[in-house]
Every structure is written in structure tokens, then in C-alpha cells.
Image (cartoon, rainbow, N blue to C red; front, side):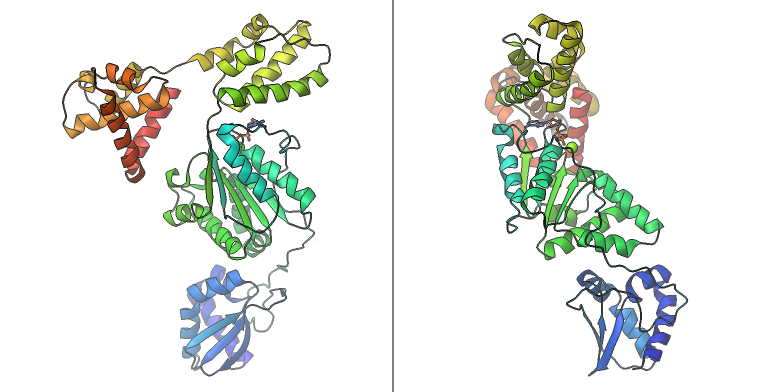
Length: 454
Ligand code: ADP
Ligand code: MG
């Protein structure tokens, strides 16, 4: 087959697959030969090879046949040395040749800036985060990939971003040869959309496929954003195939991210999934002590009375960010007014934060909200009826009571019309079990939790 024939075939393909597809996928192919009914091409990347084989083999063969070329299969190779994938040989179409796609290895990656304070040194390890910390440390060694991806999840302000930045910092010193890219899922989407708009999607793909370690923060953001998800999925697969490390964070477990495609969920679950648990008292105190050391340097004259840090660790249980904010304000305030930091001063200057942390959900509130949500009577919450339409909401309320309050099972039982603690336990288990498979139920619970916690 001559280049001229291939040129004619290209003209036809341009009409059948559309200009965008043609430019992205077919134009970069280089015709090598036709022999034994096999047409061979060269593609610039493995990813393109796979994509073209899967999606465009049929149309290409069809148009070849129309042009009188008998071929029953196409074969695409990827040259060992990365070629500059310009459609050079046969590009008879009016399509403008694209810019060079070669990724400049020295070019700055379009990552987000790293916070210099988020290092392993400044990360306080406690029971709730020890596993996440250990996994992050492992990745930061830059050795062979042992789990892929590392998926970190947990509530807001528990240290996900801190750990990811710490990995990046550590890799910069240990393995300066590695290309490490950290960015938020939102930035990923922004870059993707920009690349689409500026018709530089191949550059985008090449760039993302050229990194050694990819970290995407807050991946829940791309849920429901279909084309971004699709692109993310391909990037993800391409990197995993090349044995490159991926680190992902989200505010919840992969299986619980709504509107995330199932294939992505299951891909995300393939590696190591670790959660950062809510902080406990010891961890909060540890964090406060560490941060205080830094403030002592910054405000050398200030005196900190005994018991203040313990008081804060005890009272501010929401998240580390709030805890830090409280401490920052406390030191700034004390230095401004030139007073010793005492319990009184803390209470005075942190009234709002303490009050917000004070808000405790009661079992009665839970029962009322759940009853409203499922439009059943409040009295049925504690009554004896066993029909599903009442028993299920009641179990949801039991589950939430366990999750959102510090009440024991017998105490919860008493508030549900004097039920036995084993009944409560059974109810909670039932909901835990159903929640995994029943999306609607999981959503209901999520919504109720948010209502109650706000
Ligand atoms: P997330 O990304 O999970 O929402 P961040 O990583 O942004 O949370 O953490 C919020 C703040 O709390 C940051 O300033 C971070 O340094 C701090 N922080 C969280 N966990 C710890 C920890 N274990 N030790 C020290 N600081 C922490
Ligand atoms: Mg974060």
C-alpha cells in the first residue's frame, strides 16, 4: 500500500470519525507496512496504541477495504525511543499538524505549590493516623511500588493534604530524579477542560503520563463530572500499567463516593485503602504541644499556664484545623494584650470556637429528624411496631445515635422504649450491612448526619 492510498483512506476517515477524533488519534499514526493482511502502524505512546486498537481498528479496516486494500487486522507498535508524534508521512488532510507533543522533561509540572510546613517532621502520629502515616512513609521512600494506588480518606482537617505534601517533600530530597506531580482533583479537571478548549489534549495526556508519582487530592470532586472522570480513569490506568505510583485522597471511602463510576471505584480499591480516623484526645494534645513549641519561638515572652492545652484538647474535638486555629488565635491575642495564657484567657478569647464544639447531638433530636425524614410518627420510633416501614427508620436512628453521640448501647436502648442493648446492636449491624449495598439508604444516612451535625 502506498502513502497515497493511506492518504485517501485518511480523507475518508476524517469524514467518518470526525475531525476531533481524527486529529487526536488517527493523524499521529505512522503507516509502516502492509504484509500478510496485517497493516502495521507506529503510534507515539502505548496509551494511544491501546485506544486506537480498541476504538478505531474497525473504521480503519473498513475504509481500507473501501480503498481496495485487503487487510484483516491492524497492528500498532510503539517505538522504543519516544518519537515526536507528528503525523508526518501521510497527512493529506487540511488538518493542521499539531505542535510537537514531546514533553520537555525539565519543564515544570503543572502541579499545585507545596506547603513548606506540611512535612513528616511536623506531622504528629497517633493511633487514629498511624496506618496512614506508615503508608505515606513507605511511598515517600521512592522504592518499588508495593501498593497502587495509596488511597487516603477521612474527614476534613485530619491531615490528608498534609501527608501528601509530606510525601512530595520527602521524595524531592530522596529521589530528585523522580517526576512528582501533586494537584487537587479540581485542578486536574481545570487543566483537562483547558486542554480540551485549546485543543492540546494530547499534550495533556502525554504530560500526565510522563510523571513517576501522581498525587490527586480530594478526588471526590470529580464525581459526577463525566468526561473528567473518564480522563482520570485513563490517566490512572496508564500510570498503573507503567508501574508508576499513584496517591489519592478523598473525604470518604471509594465505595461511598456517589456518582463515581463503578469501574473507577473498583480501580481505586485495588491498592491500599487507609482511613484517617477522627482525632483522639492524645493525638490532639500531641499536636497542640508540637505547635506550641513553634509559638514559643515566635512569641518568646509568653507564659502558658498548666492545663490550657489539656483543656483545648478536651474541648475542641472537631478537627485539627480548628484546633490549630484556636491555638494561633490564643497566642496572637495573648501577645497583643500582653497577658499570660490561662484557662480564663482561653475561654474569653475562644468563646465562639468552644461553643461550636459544644454542640452535642441528642438521641431525641436524632429520633425526631429521622422520623421526619421517613414521615413516620415520633411515637413509633420508641413504640413496639415491627413492620419494615417503621422498623427500618428506627434502626437508622439507632445507628445514628451510636455514631453521633457518646451514649452506650444500654443507654440508647433505654431511649428507644427500653429495648435491650442486643436489640440496638442488631439494629446497628443491620444498617451497617445494608448501607454497603443500598445506595438510597447510604444517601439517607449521609443527609441525616449532615442535618444533625450542622
Ligand atoms: P485534610 O486535607 O485532611 O482536610 P489537612 O492536611 O489540610 O487536612 O490538615 C489540616 C491542618 O491540620 C493542617 O494545617 C495540618 O498541618 C494539620 N494537621 C492535621 N493532622 C495533623 C497531624 N497529625 N499533625 C500535625 N498537624 C496536623
Ligand atoms: Mg485536604
